[in-house]
Amino acid sequence: MEVSEVIIKRVSIRDYKATDVPEDKLMRVLEAARMAPTGANKQEMKFVVVKDKETRRKLSEASGGQQHVAQAPVVIAAVATNPAQMMICEVPAYPVDVSIAVDHMTLAAADLGLGTCWIGAFRQQTVKDILGIPKRCMVVALLPLGYPAAGGRPKTRKPIEQMVCYEKYTE
Image (cartoon, rainbow, N blue to C red; front, side, top):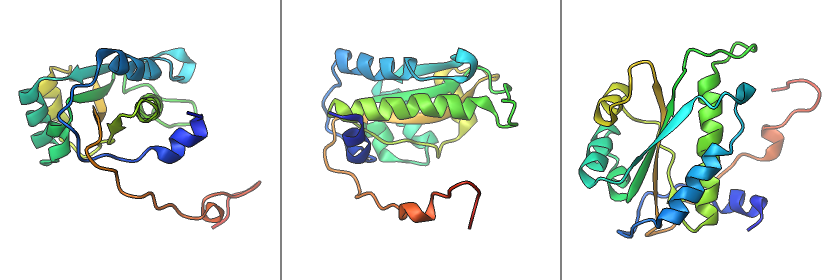
């Protein structure tokens, strides 16, 4: 599939089949994250792959009871290993770098016929405790991964004219 097709096709999936994700497909999704660009090529991130049913249930609870977190056969925790790093533009580097990698995973998954749902609503310390993540790190996202049992919600987007300005910012 062309990249532009995958971008349009990809939707958040909140209902997964009880079918394991083949290891080769999981590795292709993780490889997409590994190949993502990062500031100064520092690659200060780790991905914790969770397949254990009980651990996924605990992550679901830590995510406010979002059942699709437990239902998906795989959950990937995207972890920044150096959240103190700042870019010269005064923006923390970790949410930018890790988010690019997570987005690469969502697109690779869609291309492989897999579904994902970016989870940002979770209790940070609880997830760290469940997964043994060091205090110095920051979990940026949880990413359920599996075969969709149903389609996602249709995408609704603002018109491009409301999102793009030329030469200078305008309201």
